[in-house]
Amino acid sequence: MSDVKTIDFRNTIVPFALLDMCNHFKGMDADETMEILGVGLSLRSAIFRIIPESARCLVAEEKIKDAEPVFRIRLRKKTGHTDKQHSSCRMRDAESVNRE
Image (cartoon, rainbow, N blue to C red):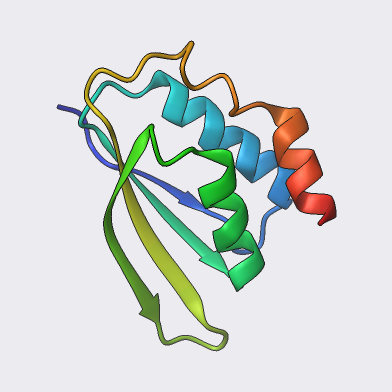
């Protein structure tokens, strides 16, 4: 099992960070975990819309007290989930979510 990858959306260009998140998730093996740091409920909602519930397990979620409210989410890729099943994680999806 590899180290947990952290994707930090703070101070990033969100569509590029969403693409990085999607690409990393696609490359993960079953039961690997990813950590996501971000700001805002709309970003949190976008993450959960882009990575379908059928592909992920929410391992942990917490709010971090900082200058602005930050959330930390840990997602684990479900066992038996293939990249073909996760085809919804594409840049066009990330762009459409970002426009909402």
